[in-house]
Length: 361
Image 1 (tube, one colour):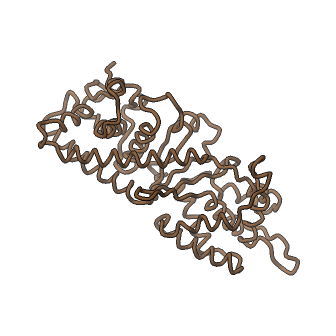
Image 2 (tube, helix red, strand yellow; image 1 turned 60 degrees about the horizontal axis):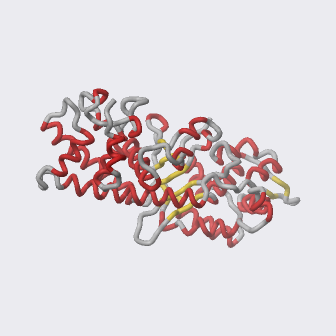
Image 3 (tube, helix red, strand yellow; image 1 turned 60 degrees about the vertical axis):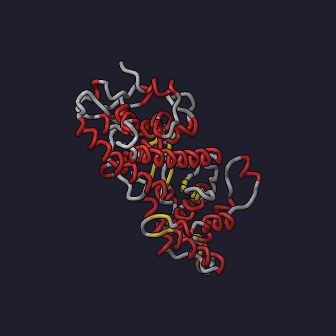
């Protein structure tokens, strides 16, 4: 059975911090760097150079990398680092410990810290396409068979392309910009002859909303967007797909999601699926749609918003708070209303896009 990314991170953290890796001088120095990177509470951006050092150590050009998306040399390097061979005959020694050490190296080899001068950063996990689960779970049953384990470690063609990574980072920067502009609007409520309050009413005033309700909504929005700002500013946000969804309708039709309930991540994780990059499927497009998705998902994970009502809560379906489906001040509970409100505060929508999202049945 699969688990969330936070559990996978925990597995990699424990393997790197307690595992018996090669005592080769270069490898030992690299493992020390990886220990700094893997803090108990998440990736430490001051140790992010360890990721490039790891890739430099194990990666090399080969025709099979380009043509087939595989690298047997890379697999051999990971097994060497994880101490797969020993004894007088230097024979293969498979074990659960070996698979955990190798899976930690494999996970980190496909982990990226996207950073841009003057802008906030993002961690992206791009587990190879040939995997149907996290490395720790994918590799564990293979440890007794050297050839099969090596074959799986050799898969290097990643789930997210470089263009995908660039778009996710751009979307995150746009989302932060939206949130900052939204907080400015909220701070101006009561100070600009009602202009800012009109924006609040546009996305959250239902037929049941009173003046006191609006005051509470402004307070709720302000505290909520401050939390989102902290996450987007924190250099701890992680984007990954959910490998066990690969090849399913969930992967194809979902933009992104976060886990809640028993599966809720302890780290700041958003799961990006293929719908994130789809064109023409939403009211907004490009960077604006990526930002919308990110704000939407972070309100779920950080603020406990819902997709309300179920199956009828998205901008393309219409999220005008005057719709009877939001009676009882329910618009404030819907993640999509938060996201479109932020887009409106940032002037990121055309009149046509706004009217589409606000249409009534």
